Image 1 (cartoon, rainbow, N blue to C red):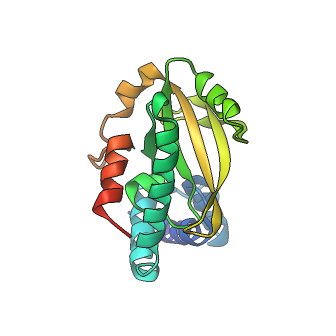
Image 2: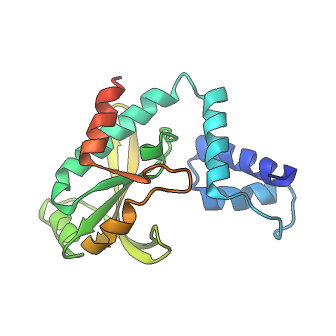
Length: 197
């Protein structure tokens, strides 16, 4: 990786950890902050994730593990509530790079895409429907909630991305690093059990 990409990744990583930015906006802001051309080659998300891990190790090693576990426990609560929709945890909370500023991303694989939304309505859960980019670059519906976390003493964003049941097969393919890109309810329960508070 060339020096400008390394610098962008490091700057973006700081913004991800300290401000809770997503990778894309953090990379664009890093380019601007560093005074680089908008045509500068950006690091890929794997490079930014590596920089985030380094940043956490250097500056947040005393707080991040407990924050991550609190987020995983909160994710587990919502995965259990949405168990009928084959929930899978993804993103920073799954991969272990989340901090108290991170949102929780849960992917639902539904026989009927509207059924998850109806379940939230039936339980009087306030949510905001949005359209986001899915894991294969397609547009998917996201049901976004803000949920209080007693452990973190903060409101946490939870995004329930609604996919068709058939998308589940492609969702379980390993990522570029050979890792499982998302985990089902059982996998998240195991993570929470393995790392007690």
